[in-house]
Length: 309
Image (cartoon, rainbow, N blue to C red; front, side, top):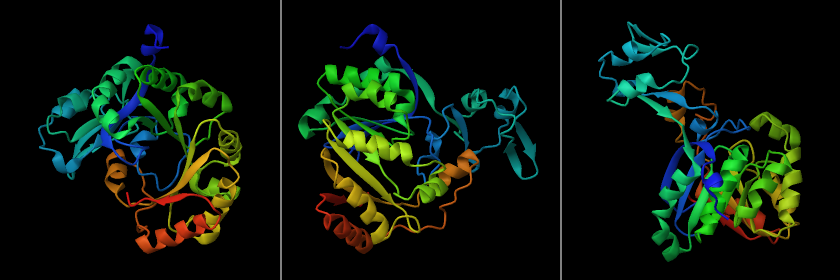
């Protein structure tokens, strides 16, 4: 039941994206929550990694008015011969410089909202949900790091007859799932690789908790979709994809397995955040490669979809 207390729960998001067709069935409104406890080197949403709001810098937009330097209380912006430079070690993320930057060369990413505020945004799209069988999806980042906020928002959506879905990497204690699952209609779980040491090298964490949670989720009763980001040099082999398909074939609640090709379009985001993009040289898997990997999954009698998104 939706309560005033539930709608007042607060969380940190980066954006609300409308008319999404790759985040669950039908036309969906996807809410991106901020904060993730994995560090996948290929992540295409680096602005969702840190929990706190951050400053993005787009030097090509700067009109050199100097308002940001005057606004910063920490001396984090300096004028050099090469132009203005952000000293991130001094930046507290207060956002005062961005508020003065009408050229949007400085932009704050991430803001705190209540579940009720997001619900109003979602309800505006209800006609699209009803006509397409869509709904709302929580993504990120890792939505389960903000479990109480996620549960409050999804519960409110369900109370208004809106289908709910959540995308998760699954690297959280089970009590986070227990908080959110009563308000979820569809689970979408990312699996990268089955090998624990390789998983640790490419994401920064072990996959032991993820696989344990996958087993519990796979027992039902909620429908489960397993999504695999296909990353060149990491898991784009028949052996790697086959090992995940073999594991997935033993999960009664599995609806299908989805293969998602890596796309090299996040470099600008990393640059704007002052982060190193280690996947800059990787190429997108070819349609032929994706089709071959889909055949591998199908050989385990697992329903499969190979996305072109």
